[in-house]
Image (cartoon, rainbow, N blue to C red; front, side):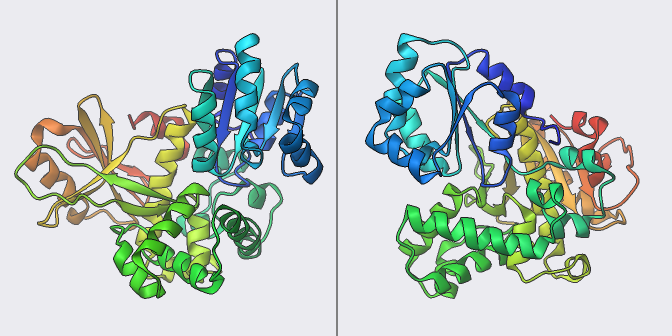
Amino acid sequence: MIPRDLAPVLQERANQYPVVTLTGPRQSGKTTLCRALFPDKLYINLEDPDQRRLAIEDPRGLLKMAAGGAILDEIQRAPELPSYLQGMVDDDPTPGRFILTGSQQFELMRHVTQSLAGRTAVLRLLPFSLAELARLGPLPDAAAAIHSGFLPRIHDRRLDPPVALADYFATYVERDLRELSAVHELQRFERFVRLCAGRVGQILNLSGLASDAGISHATARAWFDLLQTSHIVFPLAPWFTNTNKRLVKSPKLYFHDVGLAAWLLGIRTPEQVARDPLFGALFENLVVADVLKRQFNRGEPGEMYFFRDAAGHEVDLLLPVGRQCHAIEIKAGATVNADYFRGLKSFARLFPDAVAGGKVIYGGEPGQPRSDWPVMPWRDLARTEGLNALP
């Protein structure tokens, strides 16, 4: 198993709480990580029909079997179990007694927060970060990294990315969403997801998505929420403050795995990635998702923003540092030019008290240690010195 950056945090939380809940997309490595860290615990897979039936029909019997502690995989398949766990951990609050995993975050968190509030730590595991992928060997170029994506199974087993991602979408995404909500119009749903991929890095416009997909605004909202529930997409919130300046207050749209976004766009080779009109947006998605993974892997909530105002001034990523922000501009180009710094300079001019520093992350080599806005190669996100340069 490739060492995961979340492992020491997961172990630490298990030494503090009787229950640890680990959420994340399917095939992000949750089960592999939990079984590697807690090899002596009983493993109960609630995807298994027999174990799921026992959990639903006789939860006390199942938990009696697991009285010494267990890994309960895909806990959302038996939504009443957390209520029964509450009494058990109140009677015996031994730290690290139960490890719960789940891939449907809203459904899982609804039951966990109702029954296990104050009794469980909650962590998130996303697909490989750049730092984790680099443990397999040298990172490829940006186009190849986008093409393959970051699902561990693709890299562990050296699978063909288009084939593996097609299987991932058909087997997991569609099945999970059909179980969460009655998605009867599968062709329109697939079109909706592909339209989301075509808007990666853009302001989320559900009305426009609904119109292009031929569905109602309410359906578009419901389907987008389902994609969030299954950890397929995530919104990046806008940064705004009390000011008379007109700031954009709608989120931007990103995919947790940029490889899936590229596949949904019909991209099948790294060469197609490099030539695609959305290469810049996909590169931005790669960087934004990697920074989010970095925060989750430290056990943090993933607080990040972007900035845009009505005049078109924009900064791709803002990371809070106390009451200020570290500003990051993301550029796919390999040649630094003056345009790379325009958004950062505008933000610093408009909100001088809000800036705690910043940089440009770009698609080239090498870095440039400038006095105002240093330039950082994207591969440095995989290196300790690069990670330490971020908040």
